[in-house]
Image 1 (cartoon, rainbow over the protein chains, first blue to last red):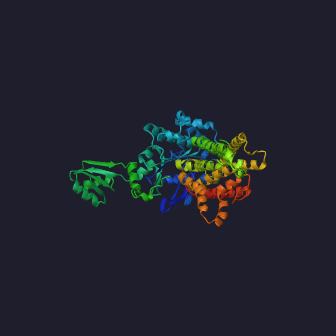
Image 2 (tube, each protein chain N blue to C red):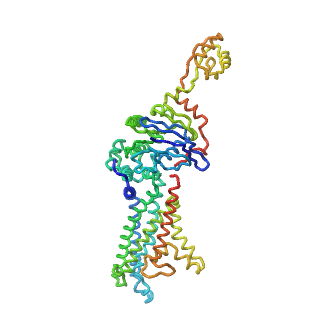
Image 3 (spheres, chains in turn orange, brown):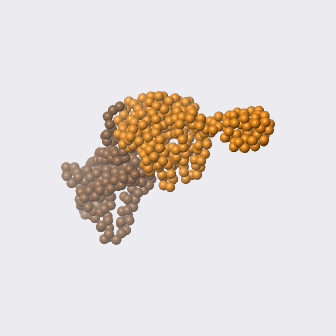
Length: 305
Length: 262
């Protein structure tokens, strides 16, 4: 069980992560979602012991990462695909990792084959494209056959075929009972690849749940069209609706259901030509949730590693 | 999957990392060529000038030290290689991959130290023995006075030339661990070996007697000389003090390494 326990991380004056507290369940793909600079990478760096928490801790079955005897056999992580010595070959890079954790060397060729970089295994990784480096990074994460897998923005640099491959791959890992924790700033990506989503903004926990839960709880708007739109708008405002004129005849109404709008129009004797509930997409939910948490100033950006 | 990894496993991993980049091979070749090449040049020059030497100069001739003179050039090659063993990991970002595999940082530093210590001790000894042998062969061919490994003082001087270079490799590594950037590390290392002695040289001579003997390069001189050199500690004391320097520098580096975010 991967447990984030009241984690706080400061970089000087900047608070990158602020009292995050959640658990990541095995057997499902958990999406870790937040705008750029919201503290996702910082959280993941603390998870694998690269950065020391200011407060709180992250535990893997009760142990912090640096207490693990053979960490690669328990946690596989891909944080930065380019964090490699460019002058070393892919195979030697993986062999060094395997040796340090006493993983049989034959496993190196297995994972190289699996991610599809076996043909360039003896080439220097400096010449690899970002997509190839991502695949090599995935090979490194899988090397120790770990029960927990962490991926920071894994689809970056992958072509559409690669993205589809990686989605299916995450699902199959989860199906095997592993914990799969994937960060992204792209809501659309998480909507299709994750089962559970944890949303953070400005280093703080915002919400969590399944994709369906998150969209269900969000209040959508209703589009309503009438030749007498201006009077309808007055009536609906009187019922505490939040009305926005879209065009001459159309209104977008928030805060009222389509039933309430229909009844109010009927009572006022207004003819409606259209009454359509607009389903909130996960994208809208995300924008709503993180609207206050998006940080464009340079001060709160995640430090470049 | 298999048993718990030990210190030996991390050291094997670091050794593989050392030997699988071409920069290591180039560095080692530079080191060997400098040391042996300078032994060749110096001994040939001395041989050709021998007939013009005064009797006093001939008496002062030291066949051991002159053949090991290349060590003072090679010390830069080994220091840079020691430094790069850690700073190149920061430059590429691979330190983060390394730490994800070996999160116990003291453990990691010790593995790197062991790899450098063993590798550079063996390499340095091979190189200084080769330089010594080539120098003596040239002196003998000109019927100059020459040294022999059967003389225990001469043997000691050759062995400790290798020890000096091994310690300097680790000093380079330790400075790299503290500073993390290759260029700054090399600047500091060169300053320590070249610039500080110049500064000490312009001090009043009564102060010089106190400071000079604490300079790493001065200790190197006594370690690889058969005789006691001027203004310096004995070879034994020099070795002990230089080892203490090394332990302190690597120790400070390790302390900082365990505290910092990677």
